[in-house]
Length: 261
Image (cartoon, rainbow, N blue to C red; front, side, top):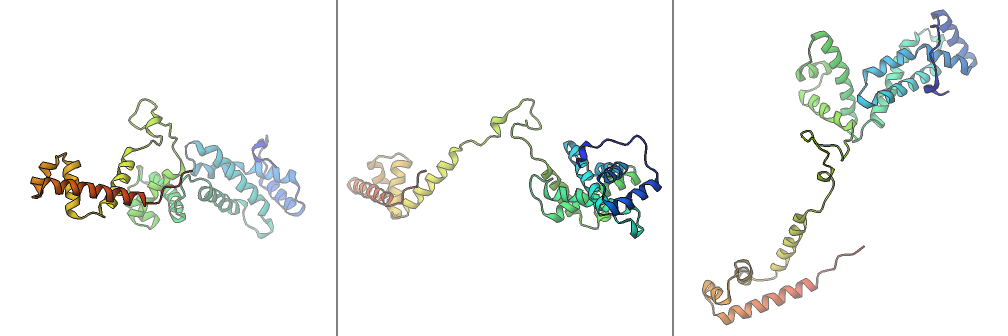
């Protein structure tokens, strides 16, 4: 049976007729009886789905609640003397909760956070009705018997239901600027890698050799100025530069080459 293809009956079935339908369906499993029972209680499923409605998910939740109703009709045993609504409500709610746990979160939050998020939504609606205002975090925490920190964490996790498009503008933007949100190459990463490589190479030189290289290429001093700075001769500075550069070249040539794909 396709739930979405059902149409409401012109007249609501009486309680007596509904009970007879349940007894006959439990005994004979006629598809036509199940269709009528589902239609008779579709309003119950819709009212439960409304408790969990969230923006564009409204239609999905209605469908999930309807599926839960069908399962409740299939599993209901009228011989137990239990009212169908008492049996159907937890069955439908369980289906809705499973939807949020398994399919309704773009980013998978811990199960206890997901369940607390649903409890907060229900308790928040009830407290709002009783207080005539939006309840505070502390009031919600007391109602759910959790800490205020847990309430805040669960509220933050509710954003995991939806994944924003990269093409969506920022909250303060009037124009679509997807290029700011799309991944781009950051030259800072390349510089960081180069600095790490340079530090590794320089570790093969003595402190004096590193100083000479810094003065020559960092401060752009000539050999004569470097000799005065370190108290050495210009010839010794020249020799030290040649030896240091040769050492760096040798060490770099011994490194494993990156694998290209």
